[in-house]
Image (tube, rainbow over all chains, first blue to last red; front, side):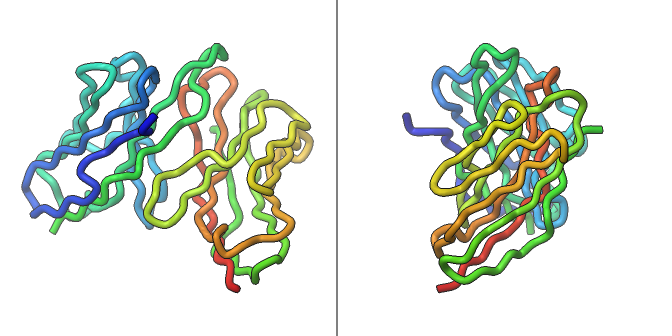
Length: 117
Length: 113
């Protein structure tokens, strides 16, 4: 398996522009997580999906952020309009329920480094 | 609420030194406990895990034992290598809400030859 795939790996944009980050989870995984990592705040869970349905978006910082999962093999995280404080590394992770009532190990993608100028 | 506390970094060691990175947790019931590692420029990857008290997780020479009495899951390695330089995250998943992982702040390890 190719693992979790994220694109782009690096994104540089100007303040006010729309940014879309993409994620392809591991085939067969039914949980998908979006995280943000910064030096100041560490690793933050933004939102997660189970069977393509958003379960908890309490970590989404504000209305400028939105996430979708139109099918089991694709998810997007969109920031519109982007601001310099959104600069961070954004990770996608996927997992599956191994019969314990929830997901087991989370497998992380390589991340997208976003820089907003 | 449930939380994970890790020792502050960076931890700086010479090659072949003994490593301990402390991790303590607060949780209701019996969470599962994890150590993830993040190498430079990469995403996190699972290093080891333990799902019940007194379990020992191990991988690549690293070990951690689930200690319910001290609510701890300290990471140890007998002889570190330069290639172990990375950021290490302790995490837990709650017994009745296992969807999410709760991560510690991470501990950076630097190993010098």
